Image: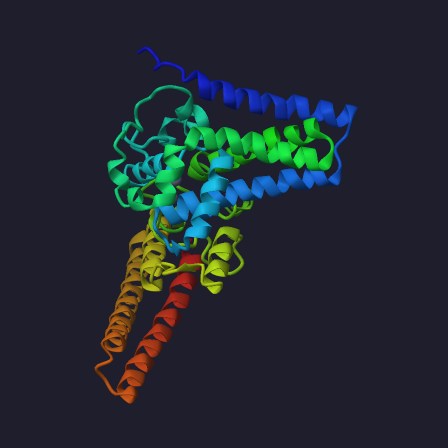
Length: 372
Ligand SMILES: [Zn+2]
Ligand SMILES: [Zn+2]
């Protein structure tokens, strides 16, 4: 079968920025050298580009994980334009298709099942027409955001203006214009590109699957370090609306920290968190699957399997009891139809049932560790 046509503009941009970063930048460093200001400008630029994509393009616009003040949306729109990954509208449309049809080679624009290279950047180099939704029908909501439409309409002049303008101004201010263009212009762009691309490639092949094995997405702390916290991709594909990707306090997720700080400053609101019972049910189901697989290869598997299943059923019951009690309490609180002491009683019951389920969770994890 003949390959689709090359998209020469993309081929040129990616290969030129890549080659200049790999060859031109080291040569310039050896000949003229860079100083701390230029390196700081590059790192600052990478962080600005990357976090505008993760907190803005990805969690705010594609997934509606929270709402943000127009000033924050404007800053993310500028940072995302600086990152040069197409308009918010286009990016989000592709990304929503990725989640809806993940791993479907004909409908996921960067399906990991088509190989590492394709999901990393190959999908942008040829006219594959997988991401052909010219009306952006899956992003009707975003078309009501004036910041999104402004950036979409003027994307090309904005990309050129910002990508040449910011490094040029920094260069004039600094004195070494060529050096600044190389570091804050080209290297910043190439590095931030690949940091984002890793989420589509690496985070679909390398890591663990604690929440689901229904798609190729993986959790990987090392990838989180490279991607502003987006390495917990198995969690993300399981609970895409959550404003967090790394849900434990020790997991590296600066995007989550930024969103939370913005909420503290009243610049963001309605941060969506997946209810704990849903997260724990998914984890338990996945653990049941993986331990059962291991047990199947052992002698006397039937007896052990029965024990595992029993503990699992108990855990699921406890989780459900807790979820019910929590729902009752929340509904009563919302309706404020009750006296305070009745509300307190409902809250206490929910807390007690949470304690019960956490106790059972401990037992369940211990049993799994023993059997596996
Ligand atoms: Zn993905
Ligand atoms: Zn996503």
